[in-house]
Length: 304
Image 1: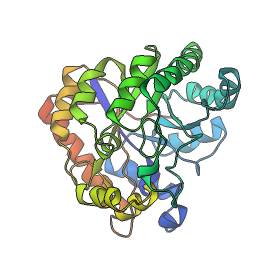
Image 2: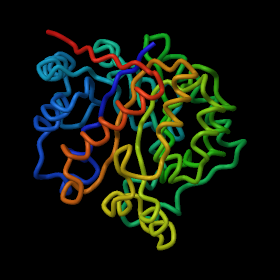
Image 3: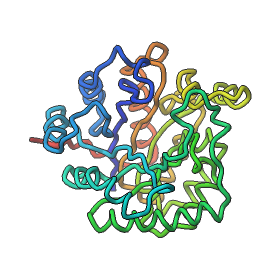
Image 4: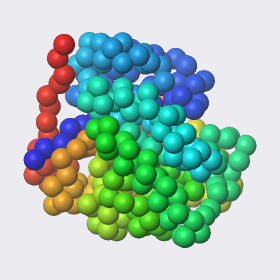
């Protein structure tokens, strides 16, 4: 049993806050990610959009595709319409051997609106979340039939943010709906990180190691700041630079025989947190906690 270590290029290329990372290129992100030791990256918008172009682009840098964001609209679309909306990405990810589609409902989220406090996110009752879960299950079953897993990303500013939201979604959906376990979003959302991991271990398919700076999070909540304000202020950081006990998380991943990707995703201001320096800090911390947990790391890379 082993894990692979990947990274989101968001530290170098933030698609939601492009001005924040304007001084950096995707080419630099991939080059530095490989140099640090990462063997995979999640898809960014500034990568080639066609499948063979993306394959060549990543392989040239010795990196695998370890997932990628999919903005869902299942609250407003019927399942058939949503299938057609995501079909192209699913086909591409199957062709490139990606582990999952990182799916999150975005039709009503406030995460991308800098004028709306993250506290003002949409909130659904547990029965309504479970009803959404039933609909999501249909989409996930279709993806599974294509050879692709749907890993749902609970996210700040969305209607699946809190521990109760995650519980209701998992309870209301079938096993085809997998969980993307994101440490930083869970803690920011007020969850007990370890309890969520232990409760839904059998549904965890993809893992984001994201740390938080609790003082910044507290200020964002107290002063009704937006999610994007939180990012700019430094609410998130790489594992080992905040307050989350990643040794405990990794020990549990080992105990549950997790064998997928551990992905660093830590969007922040590169002027305050230089991407190479912080991405290396995160990588080194993961290597350390994996060694202590007895969790082997697969360092293999794709070849042309």
